[in-house]
Length: 246
Image 1 (cartoon, helix red, strand yellow):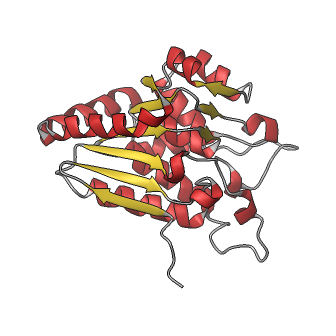
Image 2: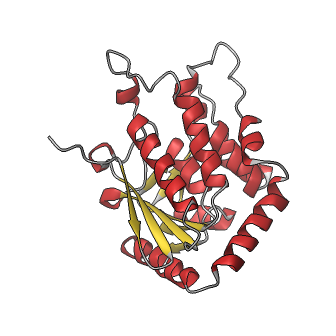
């Protein structure tokens, strides 16, 4: 039986589209998706003709977070013990990305999926969509969410998202500056593609220079060091295995 890729990479003139491709699991994150996303980001980074990347989920939804069913499978999958470090490497790759990253937030982005939205340079949100960083309700850490929030937003925005665990809807996400636009649900992907195509018409060297200068100015260190600084374990009695931190 042919294996369906967990992540798809589709190339266009001057831009690319990365698709989280597990719609039957609401594009939940497992080892195969982490591997596929890391490989797609490496391929995009290696192509200096690309000015933009659209990140979306298959099936009209973005990402429901970690696939806890996959993590809890018996026997334990071989990828589980090293997942925390591998997933952090995915975020380092996102932070190192030369092209502009556009995220299509359709329906929902939860926990680990929320961190992928926060990684976007620009995020277009459906009017019926929500973002939720709910680790506080589970006694879990949220290092990658916090790393992106610290980079892009004031503490008040981080507190609103991570200290409540609420579902935060499109209108509030726009007010907080978490997303850049809110459109009708069926217009989100088209808008992301439109912006990507517009960026693709611009000089590649200029896009890369502005993106890298902006990231260096705000981050002030290497992506590896930035994300490592948020990887501290959760104090007992709330500690959970590092593999399931998002």
